[in-house]
Image (tube, rainbow, N blue to C red; front, side, top):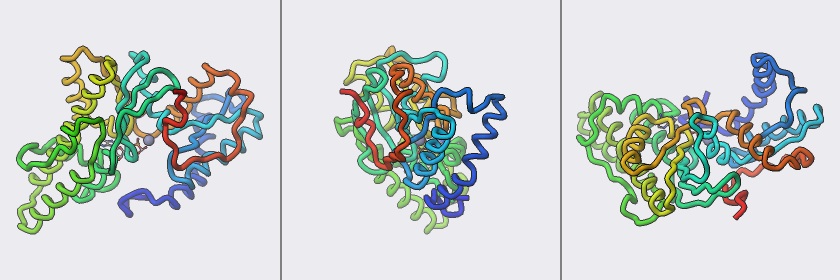
Length: 311
Ligand code: KG4
Ligand code: ZN
């Protein structure tokens, strides 16, 4: 539905959510052989994200909560991503460094324990996934372009074209991907103008672009581990599904005695399980949440993860 527009159209998304959400909940319970009466609580994403879509979710959760007499627990979307690797086995122990790379965020966090998150660095402009999507679109690939670009890169030669590794030597843990995307655009436009942009060249640009993003993510993750002295790295968010990132990170940390954890592929990109899991963890720690149902339609389209951190 969104591919025709090259990105998510907020109004189309929220209208589609209205149509799909209740039938989806029904089919999930039917498939799982469970009934709504069996659940302890309803977890719902309160933010950050697109206002319209957040409102649809919060409204359905509030309605279900009122009808079933079950508490509603509002969850931070990024906390869901951050904790999703704990759904895999072996499960990482706290504390760890988290590399959170999605379509909207690129952040390094120090996670001391549940609810204690310190931002170490983040992108000053585009998110890594956004850069993947925009460059993919320049290469004529359809949205969402990250997986398609990564597939194309498999047949390409990184190094034939040269792209920058932005901010690798900046001395901090911040990122910038907008200049890299512009450099890729200049390269592609020049090659197209010279009619030298054949299939192999496209694959070569894709491979070099992916190598540039991955190099930056690996370098900064290692720097974050060094500066915190932590020995566990947890990767989450859609770009965490990238095969090349996983291979290079795994190789880079092995020599340093660091253990790296990835969520299963299907839990890397946005999903409901990670939101349910974040609420379940909070509930286990604070049973009083069962008495404090939040049916306030309290959505927060802009919401920093640090706001829910307890120091
Ligand atoms: O976490 P996510 O599903 O949604 C957000 O919260 O943003 O991440 C989606 C992003 C998109 O930009 C998509 O292109 C990117 O993750 N992505 C990938 C791969 N799979 C998904 N990027 C690079 N390589 C992949 N294999
Ligand atoms: Zn996400």
